[in-house]
Image 1: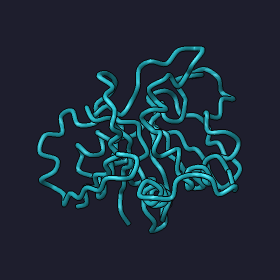
Image 2 (image 1 turned 135 degrees about the vertical axis):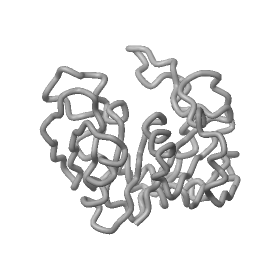
Image 3 (image 1 turned 30 degrees about the vertical axis):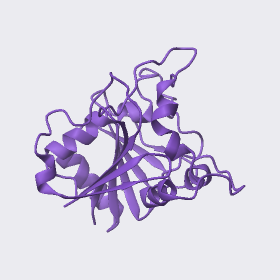
Length: 214
């Protein structure tokens, strides 16, 4: 079993964008940041349920396939679930749709009062907990039943798990763009590379895939 993190970041290290508006909730920068990933055939099949066969099939798609492989449980922050959008709505089920692409138990970290678990179509069940990274990982590891646990994000949650030394494999897809603002993944992680073997591969899209493996 491995604890994995997969994130898309910009050349200057930002994993979030800041130009969202009520009219454009994703903003213009987010599509630029994740363009290589969402263009893959795997993303279109797994997330959009598009069985047409459209999408890229090169290096980016290989990493997208790895993203979904052998995952037994997921940990994410409240922002990735979408809890911040409707914090007081007990019926809000996140922004992942009726059939989220995880198909495993998902543990959502929140500092607010825990909510009842939400069972979704396709095998995803969202569990809400206020816990330290170690505590959350214990819960997720038990649920994963021998498969990998993915810390999905956002950047702050991923950094907390990296700081705690809990991540076995970190994959970052570095998009060839500059954002200049947002949440940086690398803050306070000086010397992180010394704990891992690091490899790099450049995709046809210009995205650089860095993998840190313990």
